[in-house]
Length: 149
Image 1 (cartoon, helix red, strand yellow):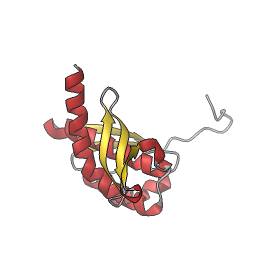
Image 2 (cartoon, helix red, strand yellow; image 1 turned 60 degrees about the horizontal axis):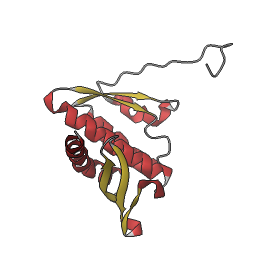
Image 3 (cartoon, one colour; image 1 turned 120 degrees about the vertical axis):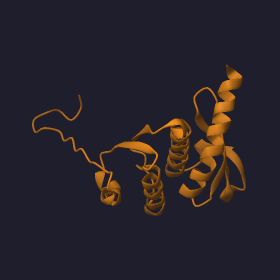
């Protein structure tokens, strides 16, 4: 089972390379995943000229690496038919330039994946609203209800 997990992790890392490069302006490559959790743990960082633990990256870069890996998992699963990709605040710490790249990627992927994005910041995804297949559901807290449940 460990060999199968490593094979899957390697395939996802291969697929993630292109996505992570496009999301990080080619600053990050060589993604290595923890096989048992499919969690990115190491990456080649161009500006640091070496391979390092992902936790040395900024929060925004870690976020883009994670998005690239999640997208790769979705693409791998969608090879046999359209699948759903669920993202929770995938761009919370992403700068404006990289956000545009991420939105372009998400729009492209909408052809093969049904993408659900949960966010407290819908304005960040407004550029996707013009896409013919984009739907939006707004859920707001009712007056008088506690903020935390």
